[in-house]
Image (cartoon, rainbow, N blue to C red):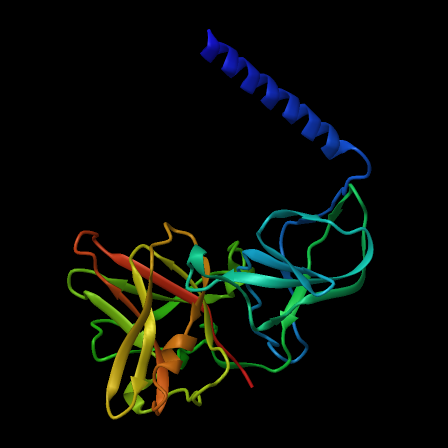
Length: 305
């Protein structure tokens, strides 16, 4: 009986404490947030920077600052509570998944943020915005390959010495739903039992390449791909010889086009004595399928001047 009485006292004390705490919590004024509703980010062109080239993106997150204080990173679409009311500075950066990994989300270092010095927050209201961002003016596109040439020999990707086959062009007509995004052509390659390796690179065989000085700013590869096989992405590094350095392997996309951001900065930083660098893509036949198909487009090697 004493044990039961003891537990009744404990339970009564807990219930009383809960209601007292609840009453105290709602006494007086309480802070009610404003809400930002962001569905997507819009990438706009810089006059003269990418004129005549594609302007695609895969911004997955927003990084939000209020009065220069970080509020957080939010996956899109996002409903963001903000404990501010009235006029404040609002800054929003576009975010991406580096190397297509959810665990490496980061603000994209090549696009300037949206900044509104007089953004009006309204308590207990939802404000819908779709921020516009653009590349910084000092962005340098060291290499662009969009395959929109009438002459297939103009493609800037050639087979490496490891490759059994080469990349060619896939042509689409203006009625194709993907025409606006990819234009009239994309790169396409195949692997099968006779041609088991497709490995293409940017002119490494001709002793040419891209030079990035030690300690250079970030270097990113933007690319879109559609593949039913694994696709490796990496760099050939020329020092005393040629080193092949894989960076990541992209999974099959099941018939969909996907845009990814490949972070080459750590690779370049690891080879401070390099003479130059070249990008490569590789697909190996899986040994099961009758044929494997890899498509590439809208490739950009991005750095800052």
